Amino acid sequence: MSEPELTGRPDPGGVSGVPADPAAPDETGDDLDFQPEPILPEPVRQRVITLTAAVLAGIPQDELSVPLRKVAKFAPNRRARMGGPVIAAHLTADPIFRQRVSQRVVTEAGDLGAAVVDGVSPAAADPVEVAALAYLARPAGWRDLLDAAEHAVRLEAESAAVGEVLQAAESRAQRAEHDRAVARVEVEKLRDELAKAHQELSAVREESRGTAKALREAQAALKKATDSLAAERGRLAKNTADHDAELRRLRAKLAEAEASTSTARQDARQQRAVDEARLWLLLETIGQAAVGLRRELALDPATILPADATAEQYADRPAGAGPSARAQSQDDPGRLDQLLALPKVHLIVDGYNVTKRGYPEMSLEQQRTRLITALGALGAQTRAEVTVVFDGAEKVHGLPPNPRGLRVLFSRKGETADELVRRLVRAEPAGRPIVVVSSDREVADGVRRHGAYPMAADSLLRRVARG
Image (cartoon, rainbow, N blue to C red; front, side):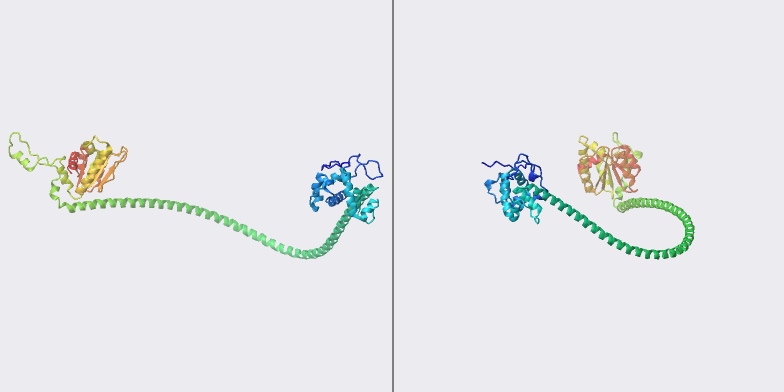
């Protein structure tokens, strides 16, 4: 008869804890009634799996199903723990496998196994061991052995629980007795301390009465001192506020005075520097005036000569003969050379007035560049101070670097170059020779009133063209 194929699926009942199919045979040999598999107590179930796992490796591989073969390969200490569900399922579902296991387990159990097979439970034997062997061997009355084992396990558990309860009760009783003794000692100590405390309390009460009286007196004095202190603080706060206000006022005055002093000092230094510069220029002019005194006396352009005046009064001229104009005009470059030869002379040029008369076809940038270059050369030849002034209303582009000794100025917004020329003339000290080049009649008249020598733009153009 071939062995049926077994699976690792646990069959509920028997070793797994749930009754199996009632159709399964009891296999006692003399009991033909079919009864369900009993529910084993947990200690008995664990012992059955342990005994089966111990003998599993000794069963031939061809007598084991595939899941049991895998379990048999586990290490002995892991076989019952990891293969327990598979072993329990096969013990419940496979009677043949259980018989093979029971033969080996009973044999290894020796006299105890033989006694269990005979249906006898030794009095000194472990009821769990007896129940496990009875479940595997299934002798006559094996269910009674299981019941007895279950009863013994229950009694043992209850006995252990009662023992733990008794032990806990004894422990609590011992702790209570110890606590009672300690409490008695503490009560005696507390009584002594209470007596001392009563004595100390009486002394403290007496002291407290005296202290309370002193405290009331101190509180009254403190209140009086506090009132006085509050009044003093009020006066101090008022004085402090007045002092701070006065200090802020004085600091403000000091700041104003310092600012005024700083401004006055700066203005004085600036004015002193201007006065010193004017004085230095005047002294330099006077010091060198002796060399050009002769030319200095003939600075103004003369319209007639003394001989011409005499001839007008005392002589006749041939018909068609006019007066001989030997005097130099404002357009004469020779006149300009004489003026530039004066010591410490300052040449001021109205820039666009000259360039628009000399080369109007050029752009403003080209006009400025040409005039600045020519004035730089003229200043280097004559060693005169040269200043050229342009209107600054339009945006300046392409201004070349200033030649050495040449001052290039642009009037500010809201002011013309003519006004800047007049300011430059007024800034010079009286007596210094100043030459202003401009064909503007108003400019010429204005600077002449301040002692400057006006020259026309053509004189400068012919002079720089010649040079």
